Image 1 (cartoon, rainbow, N blue to C red):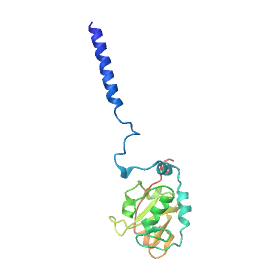
Image 2 (cartoon, one colour; image 1 turned 90 degrees about the horizontal axis):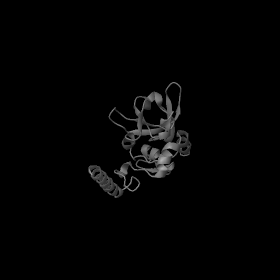
Image 3 (cartoon, rainbow, N blue to C red; image 1 turned 90 degrees about the vertical axis):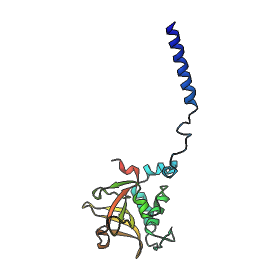
Image 4 (tube, rainbow, N blue to C red; image 1 turned 60 degrees about the vertical axis):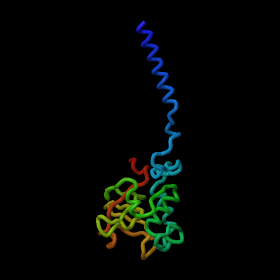
Length: 181
């Protein structure tokens, strides 16, 4: 008789847990905890499928576009407006300021920089004031980057140019597909 009681109690417990679990939302029904970290399907797909060379092809279309502080359109760009616009053209969202972009993606050592990585510059180690997109990497570790500069608008510069060589602060990788070797 004890066996029947244990079996009956076990059945009731299993049934109770099953009904309780059935009322819980599935992961597809649940809203994201933090909508700031949420990206739609197109952006998620782009993070894995867009190559650095795709970004550079698009970015080069804007060489010569004038610098315009606070702007992020083909009529004129500031540095972070340019990088966010280029990534957005390929369905990838970036923060609007260089400081916001500095917080995105993964940090990359200078020796591991790849085409499509964001590179950051500043007047001191605690200040991020400029951003560009790596468009070419040399075997010696130097690189060229496309960016919107105050004096030349959208242009390509060398990491060893006097102005930029002493102001380099780091690089960030946004494209997830670049993490896989």
